[in-house]
Image (spheres, helix red, strand yellow):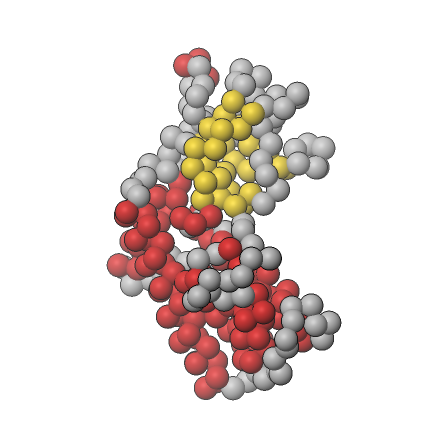
Length: 227
């Protein structure tokens, strides 16, 4: 595993942050085997996936213009870590590189009928197969390992996991207020960083630009666009 950059949190750092808010001793390795440390690790993993899936993804976990190749049964499969899929012509899911006769397609992420692989589903035709296309260009939102997230999101995820862990186990309102304050600060930092990236690399017609604008609009109206 590569050494973390200065300013980045490691998974161990995050686990110990969660343990600290739960009033538990820190550990010196991720796989310590201690029950509370294992619980903290699971909560971190769940919170990482939850936050990365929020509001259609973020700049750091959105891949634009991914060209998928059709398999032998006319399906477009997606990687196992895919959280969300959208067509490359806008947030509502228009499929790209299609013959004119195919018209407008709404797409979504769905498991195939065999219950195995996830694929791009053709909502317009209610079909998991695409007999008239050989390739499909889409945008993918994908979950990435915690330590590969940008620092602002590492802190946001860790603070959220710590707050949820503490809130579920302790009755100290004062401590809950402190962890909520930390969470609010890191959530704001992450959202602002994400918005800055979107503005520096404008792609408002893509799914991420659409949802990033939605989040910022809610901030301006006084309500958070993320849960």
